[in-house]
Amino acid sequence: MARFTAEHQIFRQTVREFVEKEINPYADEWEAAGTFPAHELFRKAGSLGLLGVEYDPAYGGGGADHWYTVVLGEELGRADCGGVPMAINVQTDMATPALAKHGSHELKKAYLEPALRGELVASIAVTEPDAGSDVASIRTTARRDGDEYVINGSKIYITNGTQADFLTLLARTSPEAGYRGMSLIIVPTDRPGFRVARKLRKLGNHSSDTAELVFEDVRVPVTNRIGEEGQGFYLQMEQFQKERLIAVYTALGGLQRAMERTVAYLRERKAFGGPLLGMQYIQYTLAELQVEIESLRQLAYAAAEGVVAGENVTRLATMAKFKAGRLVRRAADTCLQFHGGAGYMEEMWTSRYFRDSRLLGIGGGADEVMLRVLVKTEGLEV
Image (cartoon, rainbow, N blue to C red; front, side, top):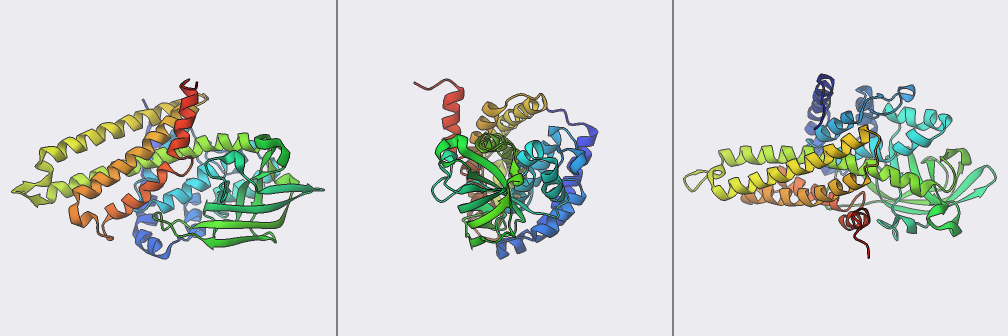
């Protein structure tokens, strides 16, 4: 069971007020624009200490326990759009964990510290046109030339891609060494040879800018590498666990708010002589969904407890990510269905939630990849 103290609840209120004041009033505008002012919003989040709750205070982090990250995710999930919380999650738990844990002091001072203040926007650059879930197949190269890496290749589906000040890039530093020949490298986006090839249009998460990136002889110092050369694949696998957990926590917040909004609508909507909520089928369906949401919550909290205890939570994080990806699709479809024709309208929250929620089963490791991992952890291999 989670141990949320009074301090955790104060932090929860802080995050909820941030969402209600700084995100929700502008969600429609940012969705229509296909982007949001990341530098402006991140500075506000940074001033509240939201961008590095568990990181070392020496670099501007909060030095807090993992339950603060759980709270952050749950409250961001209550936003009126999925794109902005996802962008914040990239900043906090996808593009910076390896830097915070394995980066040099100089690298953390130059990039992590301003990122936690919201002055620099970060992005994680792993996926390529021919290598998505199969991370070991990436082709972008970082060839060493003296004290520099010369980077060539492309990345795609990169969140924060058009606004990022730096990328945490996974590239091949030893092409012949397979997955042992990859390194994580910090790449400032103002370097010659880097360009945003195009901003991508998506089914949902419209407020989150997503891009295809190109690297043509981009030079960065070797000192921009995170950890040892050849360790990039392992460091990225470690980062994926944080990415998957924050995605699950955020999904939990979104699920709970979707249920609250749907119940409120059904309580007021009259049909067949009474409120729709009075219909037994609807009651049973929502009750069953609550069981599933609570099951996901307990699975996620068990993983969180493991993180706090310093345990390897790959198995639990994988299970939670898989279950969350399936559950949000079911919940979004049910909520839309129970709103009837109104739920299908663009101006109704259900339409946006339906679109936005579909990404969870793909991003950060597709459902099928999660199952592949579980086949190994559960001893199901032949």
